[in-house]
Image (cartoon, rainbow, N blue to C red; front, side):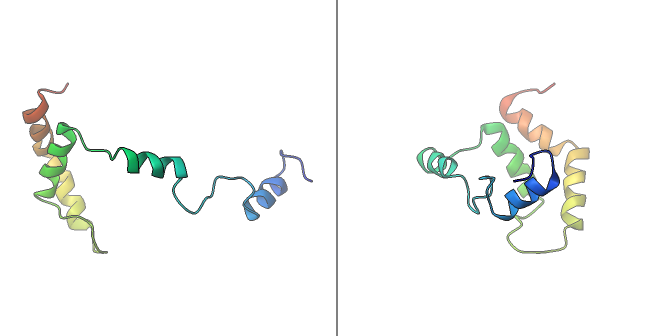
Amino acid sequence: MASVSTSDFWTDLYARGGDGWELRQPAPPLVEFMERAPLTPGRGSAAARDAVRRRIRPLDRDRYLKGDLDAALALTEDGSVLAAVEAVIGPLE
């Protein structure tokens, strides 16, 4: 067996899946946690998402993203998202 300091050791380990990191699925404890206690966004996060969704539709299918990126930049530059969040949770510094 090669020393852990050599690339051959790691190449072989990854090739046979011996590292234990690649499960090809979400980690079972994470799945269990999410099923037991689904996460709901806080009020500020929900306000930010709603502000973005008024201008940018969800990425439910592949499409050219230049328009979405331009809209996201505009929302950031004009302060729309920040204003929406602050309207719900108060001023941010």
